[in-house]
Image 1 (cartoon, helix red, strand yellow):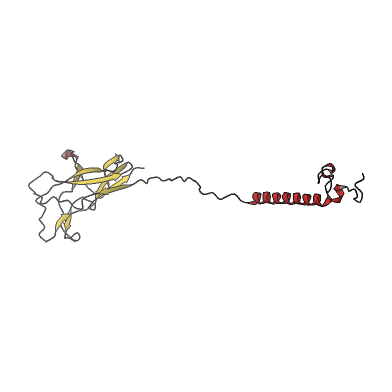
Image 2 (spheres, rainbow, N blue to C red; image 1 turned 180 degrees about the vertical axis):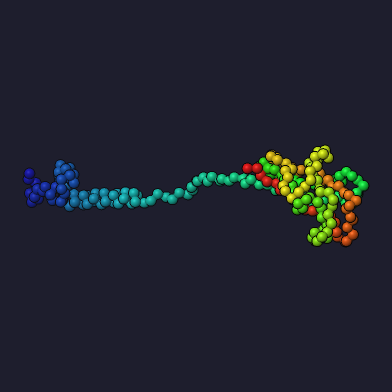
Length: 220
């Protein structure tokens, strides 16, 4: 095709350096001066490059950090089997009267707190269960002892329920249930007889004595 005199006809596709599919069709650019056309194409290229750059920056930008996070934790425990006891540190019969052939009595109250079933046993430090002479700090060597052993029973039981205490464990309560926080108080009667064979101790600080041990244990 021929153009105006003095201007060569151009094939815009090759004059602008475009390959197939990269420039507008020849019909759309026909009649536009080559300089203007090149300027427009370069401007279009710049816009496309700018848009591509913005898109790549947007895609490369990390998302904003979270401002909160929620998690859960299970709190777990169990309760240990526990037991505790309290007893008076001392009880006394006072002066025993030999003429009284029955039992002289006093009471021990033992309190037990347990969160599981338990039992209570009793024993003393004398194999024969007889109170010995005590000089205030220890048992007197070759000292005297009472003629009758100390006896015990649960409070409220008849006198026939008395049992002589020994150095072997004897069951006071068996299979008692858990007490709860209030505990359970067990009252135990102690009975002691006296004889005219028993002498009064004259030395200051001396008395007849024995040590009783109560033990509360869980049932497993």
